[in-house]
Length: 314
Image 1 (tube, rainbow, N blue to C red):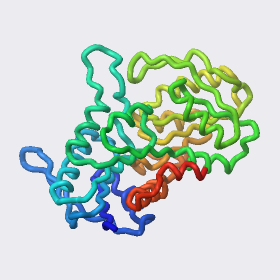
Image 2 (tube, rainbow, N blue to C red; image 1 turned 90 degrees about the horizontal axis):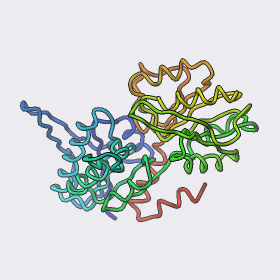
Image 3 (cartoon, one colour; image 1 turned 45 degrees about the horizontal axis):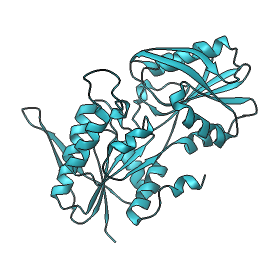
Image 4 (cartoon, rainbow, N blue to C red; image 1 turned 60 degrees about the horizontal axis):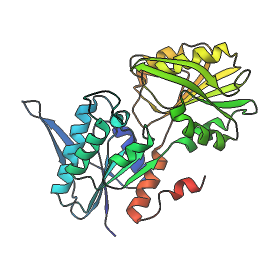
């Protein structure tokens, strides 16, 4: 069988180290240089010839820098005669650009997928894409993982007898329903209308939440405007308690601090798909690791085993 070779870009090396520890393989060195004209150059500093290469790189700020870095890594692996190159992308920022909802705009999620394939991606391993159709933007196989099991395992440690999962909008309701099934509790959803990137309204909550312990579930939290708007509606409905969960804790523009200062928010739970600086973390934040799930998926891809069986097991 071909040897495995794992490299990391500079977006989230801590996660790559943890993934490799679970795989039992070394994280191979890669060097990123910047020329005087501001162009990047990447060198994979280990043999790739006829090896099964995995490149770990979430699309986090600065997104464009990390995207170009990944494209250069892909091209380097192809030029070094890698047998297969899999992009391990715990967070795909451009997945939010998934439709043409205004004149003369680009569907960025598809364009970036085309760039990765053109640069040499043979396969993609992603975690909780913003919407299901993004999977179809890639012309190579995509294994799409989710973090619902990790989040559910965390919440099972508390009393769920009066709990309900609430999705901030109907677009995320299917994922929220799956999460609620894992926990064995009901689900509700907000009726959201978005006017701009940071201005939304939630007119009502569909489902019974009054007097319940609410777990708000979203795929990602950036500025937090949607969650804060939902908190207003939940308070009006006199919920008993509020906890917040998401896969991608981007927490831009001070969102984590704002959410933590909400007095009725007991806990904020996310995973380590993206790095969260230690200085920005608060006492209410819990960060769960998805490294074991990524490592097991990578092992199965390498061995030619089913990745979907990971979810069949619960």
